[in-house]
Length: 249
Image (tube, one colour):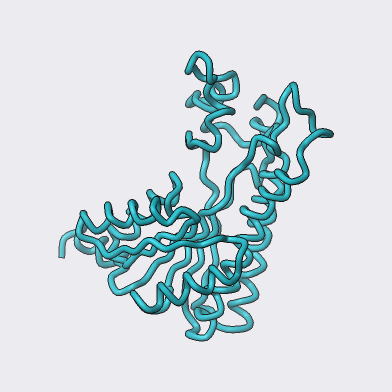
């Protein structure tokens, strides 16, 4: 067997079902395609079912198996519906990716909007979509994994969870909670149910998305903002994250 074939078999997800929460977002879409390329049947879940189905159609066009479903990460009833829909189509969820979340302008400090004036509703929404939604998804889909004594949960955190960046206090706090919860849940499931239950968190670096575009791109000129220029420098990307804390503006 050649090396490529050996690696393909080693990392094959054939016969597995993966559910990507927030699967129509920038990161979620890429992860859904990656899981499909590895052989998994993929369910893309999000609030806008049309956007989720568009991702699913692209995967099916490439020869994969995929389904788009409607979901609200803060509504347990719709999460349960998403679980039943997934199980009816592809069987029990083997892999759960919690990629939902994001930041909000109302929870971001600016020269015009100091920390003391941050909107409470926006802060609550950021904390809810990033942490509470991850918590609820792990409850709903993790239960079946615990019953089957196997499964994999991947929570999407952020480098700002480890070294909080300037301006995004609520987002950094929410992602820090995701990291702490991931560590707790990994221990809990392994000790109480099975060591074949795994929970991990990924902390991506900077990606330009519609949610952070206003921080990185100047809306008038279309050029990088000062913050965007700092994030775009290769020397900054390889620097220890402690440097981001004091120098990101």
